[in-house]
Length: 289
Image (tube, rainbow, N blue to C red; front, side, top):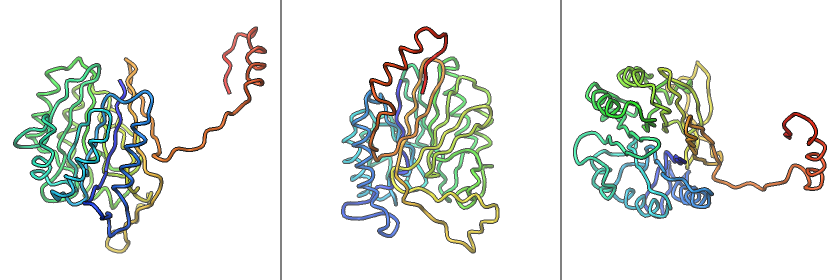
């Protein structure tokens, strides 16, 4: 099973750019979709893990619908802190897996990997939130199929990243989530967005990956002395990207791709390769570059 993840799209209305006209997020998303549609093999599902709109405005979601409709594979949408829950629900109602009321959690009974999408947004701040009500819902859904490999998608990474201004008030909000996932060894991965950088770690014994954004990236500043009251946060216009999560029947492997395609070169001529292979045919070892 091949799952693509795009995140932090920050779509704006037509003829606009994000972050004070600094980021042409719509054009960057269009390029990412073109790259996705050229992949071979094609992903069976594309998961968009939050901050789909820049300000959560209805006109931004209408543009988002137009852009997402170009993706060849089915799309699963997840809410982020730049999204507005009720406008998200209303404008993306054609995704009939979204619940009509309450938190925007849902399950996709895909096989061989089951998908659980979580609403980790707060009504009052940009940090993550995961209350006891959400934890009870997740525990119930996991208990329904505790023997099925399961991928959990949410916007906010449930750990401190070391990028202080993005970590906000820290990861204490995630404790109810981490308490639940520790009970279920069938969870093969948590995939997240929000950080606009590729990051890999584990929490509660479960692997977690964060995908780069299809728009701008957050500047990597791991200084423990960063003070948002004295310093301005910075973005970098690094090449945008996305991730591919490949299930091989036993484990999930993650590949990060840039949207931009690079020139490909052969590391060795075909004639030289043939000679090398021939020279190894009598040796009991694996040929490799």
